[in-house]
Image (cartoon, rainbow, N blue to C red; front, side):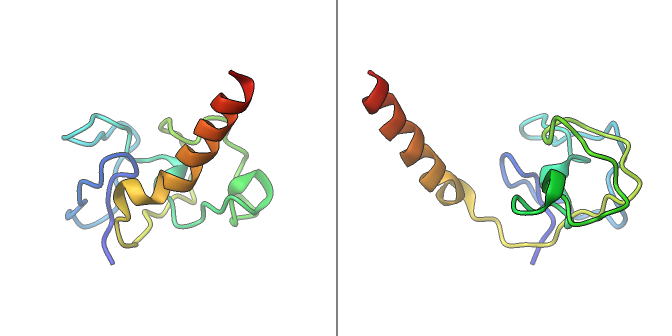
Length: 96
């Protein structure tokens, strides 16, 4: 299990958590974002399992959440979004 950028998969190897202004050296995505957090859960209220955290609108932008903990997981790469991409393509075909 590794800590990595949610967008490109670059591995975070430093000890500790990324700061609010830190970004991925490969794709320049913010690192301290909900999508990189261990508490992020699409099925939970406000997509966060931490009940004390304040709701965040943009899950891909850096925020000040004091409960942020960078998730340790396997990088799934493009396969993780294949279901979402297939759904978007089906919607495009449906709507023309």
